[in-house]
Image 1: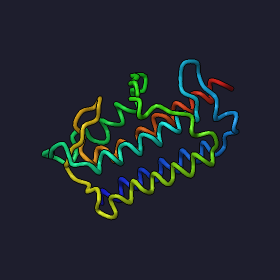
Image 2: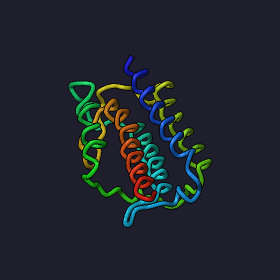
Image 3: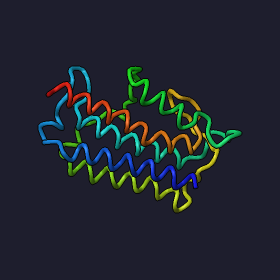
Image 4: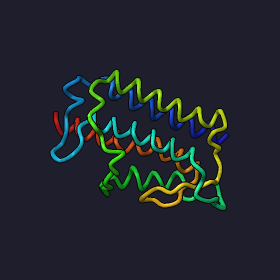
Amino acid sequence: MIRELLFKSIDNNTTRLIELVGKLTPEQLQLRIAGKWSIAEQLEHIILTDQVVGLLLLQDPFSKAETDTVIGQERLEKIIVTLRLRKVMAPDVLQPKGTIKTFEAFREQFTKQRESFKQTVVDGRIVLNSSTHKHPYLGEMTVIDWYHFIPLHAQRHLEQIQEILAFKK
């Protein structure tokens, strides 16, 4: 049951982001607000984050929590999406390098990464349980917390993309 709910959340988020970005021109992908990442850079950062989280969850867990979630979906949503004004500097590994230049490149990499992320659960390489892995800013999070984190993190950037588009009209 939890697997289906998490996968549905990831799939809905994937569809929403692809639908929004699919309507943008190549010029719009390069839009930015001064001092911030362009839309294309935000998209690349989302892919990089998904990749790093996937690799993290394949490693041995930090510990086991007493419950399936340490933070929980509602609290993660509040921290990541609702309180977006709180800025967190992404580590170097998650900084965009300029590899995403077109919608097609984004869609191909993004959908492949999202399917791979779900497949690790389907084939048993990642188990949705109370095993924990540390987030650099949020602390210990269970595997289920991390699966909530993925679409919420992308939602944060989706809202930033919408702000860039509204600002540049």
